[in-house]
Image (tube, rainbow, N blue to C red; front, top):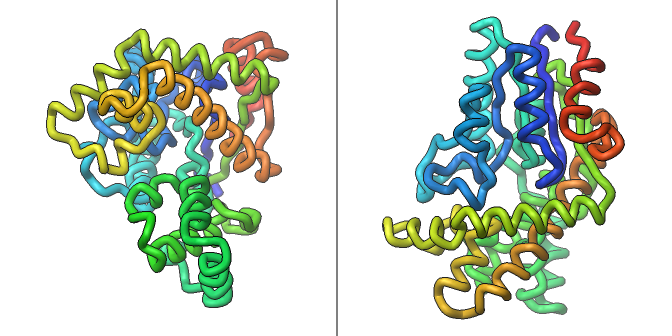
Length: 306
């Protein structure tokens, strides 16, 4: 396979954005984002999009491509990402995939069947579980495994909750392990960024504080003033859901911040669980490497396109 692709993945707040930019500058490359929230226009602070000065250093793709109320699937993302990767390569530049949305990364790197067939035995088990433990237990699991699907489904809609869990589980986002035997779509080398848990959590808390200082609450208020419905999938993302509770007066700001930090830590843990299931990823501890510039040096040293 002659389609060479470099990918930089890992949990939120691990430094992927800056490492990707440093690597892209060295390779005369361009970045394709693999982030399920950065696709939305006008949602900048809560999604931790690259700052304008960072995007001026290196071209970024698959960012700011849809409005917050537009439906957007993994299949849609793959089509956009493939087009960007082909365009970058056609201009003689090195494409670099950077992001922490595991399913988006996988959709680019591996063949996927987006039409998930019914699993009648799993459906029977989930129906039995709903009867024994209550539908709220299934909905809580769906919220954990696929929050975007949960945001679209009413907590009392048993048929859709069970189908969504069925799809998520078969896609590898639930209790079954991810099927890593799928055919590759690119000749990819993946680097994963990591840090000790305490350090990663410290960075997450610092990021949340920086978002607040940058005007996260004001950004969410502005989205509402422009008419975006708070029930949209985009408004259920980290930062937006918590600030909505605060802006509605349901919780004080301090509680919204506490929940945002907690939920972001949980999200980072899920990201690590997803990516660590892939033995092809070469992991780099950011601290041991001497920071983001040190990570970039390691990536550049090990990157050997055929």
